[in-house]
Length: 141
Image 1 (cartoon, rainbow, N blue to C red):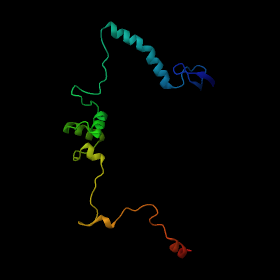
Image 2 (spheres, one colour):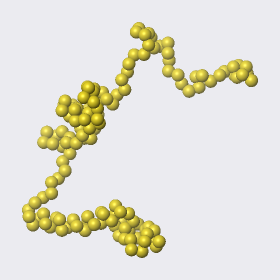
Image 3 (cartoon, rainbow, N blue to C red):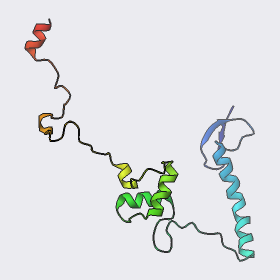
Image 4 (spheres, one colour):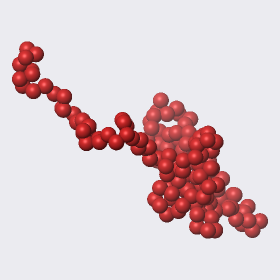
């Protein structure tokens, strides 16, 4: 193995004498970069422009599921029933699942214990709550 310099990023790496790139990703990126001028010239000659990726539709709503989910979490949009179903289908929820996307992300708080029981009697337990007192430790030996 010889010390080489990547033709794409200029980083030094250990590689075979015939290697020109430090990774497969850089080899592919260099190949695409070399082909890009020919593609752009062909498009200009035919008066064709490559479509631009648009993350928003004409109404200003996100086109992708990720965009819809993040906008719903931020509260900038309210998901339609169709969009909710698309998200449920994407994650593989059953047809009987009727909670909305935002409800799925929040834990369900269900009452625990008999009806009318005050949870004040059961405070949250913290680390060290069950630690024995010095007297109890003395008894344990």
